Length: 380
Image (tube, rainbow, N blue to C red; front, side, top):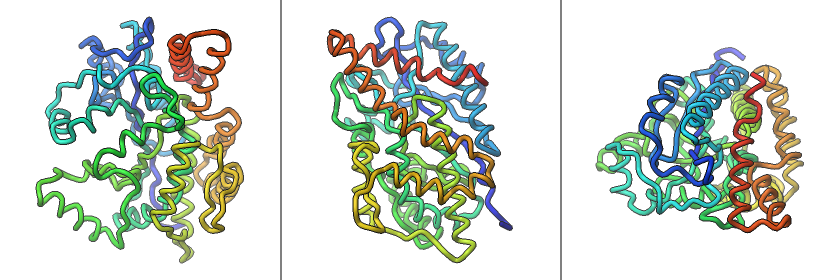
């Protein structure tokens, strides 16, 4: 396709830092840890709102394979630096038992401004996510693809769930993270706009009113990046296993290329009301993929596996063009093996059945998360 977007990729992952002895979140990590991480990762590591969090971001990658290699390198570096201090990162969107009330905030002006404005809604943000940027040079195309891609956001969430526990309890949700994040303003499904100019007008209203500094304070599940010519998908929990992160990155970039391909044929994905997409978003939070999802074209709940097979067939041409067929096939592995949320709950129930206390069982879940965060790194 002529004038095809670059479809470059950037992946950001947020991790929680735990004490390997107590398995709890480290409340006050050594001050040297971040400096050591920066020395190993360069400008690809940053602090987060809370001191028990750390964020990494890949370079701009030309393909999924480059993204995998860089993500693996960054994970390895964070694991190595953390080990020097008796700590370990876990790629999970919530900690199984540590309380948000005990955490210390990173001393930065922008974080202090955030908690001053958001108060208790911000202080609870002991949550981590995975953000994937896909390079789309055209402003107008970013808006058009944002409008259409919103349909698939619940599917991506369902495959990424890693936050079933909160404060030492099974929440009954596979992704509890979003119940915490949705308490902030300007979150949830993206708004719809007829053009880039219309989007910019709305952003300018909030900026002119002094409510936001820029569009980085728009925290939708999917947004045009304020700093890069990319469309940034933010709905996903952080995936505990590297292979799952890469499978979902491959699925996302293939979906974007598929929607662009339809556009070149004067076709487009049908736009459904936010009400209906929100229903699937809730089902993904609650069940992951266990109880199916609404096929909005047919108006019935169908097995999630059927929807995924249809999606994989839809984007097969795009996976071939982007050279990520192998990585995309990892989506089926998630369905076979279970998301991180499924594995956490299974591990907890296994420990309980073996006679462990709830507290011991939750520590066992942390041990599993530490192991799984490092899976797949040694092969690269």
